[in-house]
Image (cartoon, rainbow, N blue to C red; front, side, top):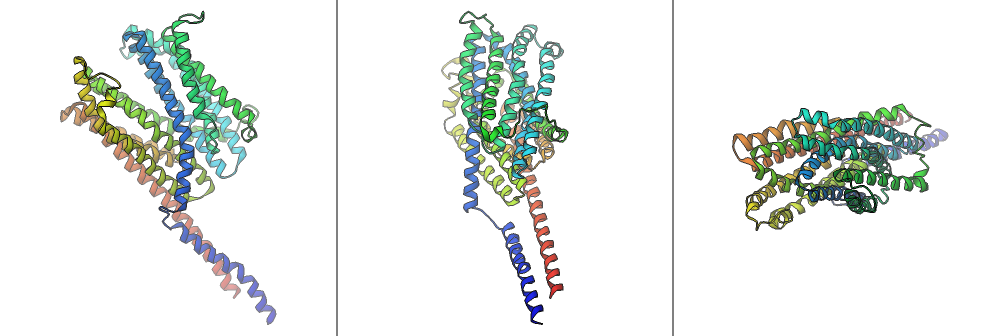
Length: 505
């Protein structure tokens, strides 16, 4: 009798302890974590990761700005033709970049699950996909003159665009390889000197532009093609710089990511394609939206189009801050998803949304408080021919401030969704917000109600607002479903052990 009592005592203790632990875990899953230590820690994590990514994004913007200035120095015709080529390059490259950017999400997930082989295989797959995309993109850009004629472009502009594109297309492969390595290092929560590399490349771009455009130091004078070659050389240098760091630092070298053909993993290759293509299309959908918006502005006249370009360029620079946060949130959510820490996913998403909203609001406040000074950076208000454009740009900038807040919110939430490996959901929402709601509303307000360019801006803002709401709801619903699933699993596990305990007793 005493033996049975002692046996039951020792058998029941772990079960009872486990039941208490399970009940505590269930309570923790539903607890509100606002303004506690977890939020502070996650905020610090996002900021640490986002800072170098924002610096890199601003460096990329600076490189594009330098190229545009150099085209302008070469003359109006060079700016028109070169700008056409740069727009085409940017659009096709952005789609490829979106596809390859998924490497960071998959690496982050594998890092969370502590699966080092998946990390290595994913990066190798990223290199293969990047190379194939570069070849396809290169073929398209090399034959750009054929389809530009079909689009009814001016012959001189076609020739100038082709001159730029035939040099710039060589930037695609090293650029995508750099993005692959960036995804690798950032996915390991160790971005390294990415911001420094891109900033250095920006300075190098200025120097190379002058040398190649004007033929300094005995080199041939390449003109517009020199700007394209400068881009290609700098993208190659960026890849080599990060590649050397990855190869030499033990924490990266251990993954042997450059052993591409030694171990090609078909599953990793298919995963990069499956998850990456929706993101690439999403990038393309957004880029196409702004291209169509510019065409609509062009129908309203040169003044409207010029004012739109000023507001759009200003928003684009400010937008790089939410983009950096988006990348950080996407990576951190991916890591937490790999760990199965659902409450951490919600925390990261909520903090990212709040941080992005704060950054966007600060810029929006600047757009509202000092619009004249901002627009004055582009054109002088004291020149008579600029007066109409200047005043219209002030109106556009006021609406663009609202636009920026919604745009920043939707991109950050899309990052959280992509981090949970639901890139198809973000694509569907983007198409719905941009093209089903945004563009028709822009046309309705701009042309039917006759609000002009201001109406187009409000239409875009409404489309992005709807996308932001849908992205946020999608994130909340999906994360809540995962929490409920965890709670159900805990309940079933607890019930199972209670049943065992009752049978023992």
